Structure formats: structure tokens, C-alpha cells
Image 1 (tube, rainbow, N blue to C red):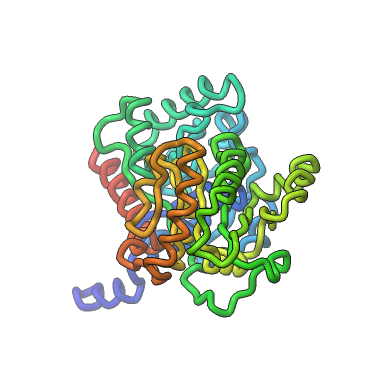
Image 2 (cartoon, rainbow, N blue to C red):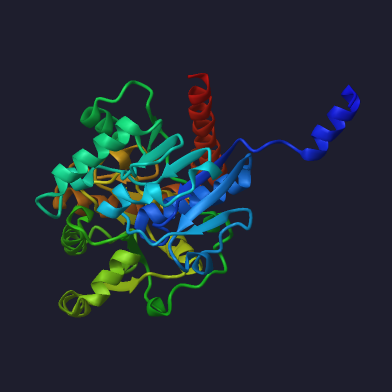
Length: 389
């Protein structure tokens, strides 16, 4: 074949994919990591140059409308399990893939291709729910970091904490943030709030992925009570705003009869639970401010989601959150409930002062496309390093 024919054949074949990537997506629909992996899959499909396969739980293909270019492999091995660590690696035909990406810190043994691990936070170590969590989490994170070819941390705060825990070599852990969900890029002006909020009036919003202690829900309610009694709202609102709790963490409140009964006695806190994307966008757009009462976070996707529709964020001085805030947002002076109550009032005034136009330059770094491009670059570096070795 002559040179011109070779060029024509190459052009007809099209560009070769950067890599055949298997991404573990078994946590789709499961809290913040589920949102992270869904947005990453959509972003990678958009930027292309990867042949993407997702490892999903049975039925996930029907529940999640993933891009048609993404192949699916069904796998029912539980996440964060001994079976995942010891068996999953033997259940995959690794000859079909060039790289494996797991979005949490359990890296299975037996993975026979280069691997990338995402670590979101060290909450299992810093504020554990069970006494044995720190020892187990430390062992798993150290093992994953030592065996992975690259590690992604969703915030600089998490990156620093993982480096300190593991002693990883400089440059092995990269800061690549979460991406904003694409549905928030659409107009919110015509979207309707959940029926439970009909006629409610002005409200603060808190979006909870769960109700674990580090999320600070009791402190949130205490701070809101203090804000209401202090009458900081007078002059900024005609009536005292209410507090709306949404998200999967709010579903836990709805399922807890005692907690729900206590809140139902109050007329100032409304629990709507998990809502559809369109209603969540409307909640963000129409809230006076998003309040994040967490004591610890590895990232905070709700903060970005609120910012994407121009709604100010009120939070405590948590490292990962301080990386996300802008001049329009309010960070409490300290971690106390009193400081959070004061921040409610400052958030109310901030929304009135700055208007509701999103800061596009700030948000661009968190677009699915931009985040996926950064992840794809890591894949490329990992494969180049392996080939060079």
C-alpha cells in the first residue's frame, strides 16, 4: 500500500481511543460517590478518546440513563466488602481493558491493569461511626494508595490528609474535583417547587446526602432556632424564613418516626426528602441561601450546585468548603452553633446584596467536561508511565 493509501485508510479508521477504561460504577445512586461517578461517566463520554465500560449493579442500566457509548458489565459484589477486596479482581476479564478506575478507596487485589483510585474524604478515620472504622480505613487507604498508579483527591484538603496518612510520593495524589450535574445548566425559571412547599414563602435550604454525625443536622436546627429568636431577619425579609431539608439524608428523617414527629411539631422546618432533578434545581434557585452545617467534608457538591444558579452558600469553616466559596458566600467565624446562627443572617443579606447571577468563571473548573479532561489526562499519564517502564 502506498503512502497516500495508508493515510486514507488511517483517516477512515478514525482516531484510536486513548484507553479501554473500566470504571467501577456500582455506587451509582448511593450518595455523593454515586453522583461523582455518574457525572464523571457523562463527562468522559462527552470528551471522548476513551472506550468506557462501567461496572454496575443489576438493574442500574435501567435506572440511570447513561450515554449509549458506555458499555455495561453487571456485578453484584457489595462495595466496601471483603469480597470486593479479595474476589472482584478475579471476576473481571482484564484482557479487555487498559486501565481500571475505582471511585472509592477499596482497590481490589488481582487487578492486572494500571489502576486509578479516587479518595473523597477521611471521615471514616476522622469521625467514625464505629470503633473499628479508623483501623480498617487506614489499612485500606494505605494499601490502595501504595498499589494504585495514580490517586485522585476531590479537594486539596483531602489530598493533604491522604498524603499525611500514607506518605505517598510527591505528585502521586492529584487534586481533581467533583463535577456539577449537567441538569443544573438548564434554566430554572419555569421549574416548580415540591408540592409540600406551596405557599411557604421565603426559605433557607439544606441538602443532606445522609444524617451521619459529621453532617451536623442537630447543630443546624439549633442554629436556625437561634437565628429565628435573634430576629436577624427583620429588615431583610418581611417574615422569618423557614428551613427546608431535602436530599437522601432527609429521607432518613422521614423514615425516623420520632425525629419526624418532633419536626412536625414545628412550623418552621419542612422536610421534603429526595426530589427529582428538576425540583432540586428549583429548590436551589428559590432558596435564600444553601446552609451546609457539616463539621467535615471531603468536597461539597450541593455548594457548587447552589452556586451554579446564583444562590449563596452558608457554611462552617471546613477546609474543603473554604476551597469552594466565593465572595458571595458566608463562612461562619468558627465551628460553634452561635457562629452558624450569625452566618444565617449574613447569608440572607448576601443574597440581597450580590444578586443571583452565577459566577461562570468560578464554575467552569467544575464542569463535567473540564473535570473529565483532567481525569483523562491522568489516564494518559498512567499508561505512558507504564509503557515507558
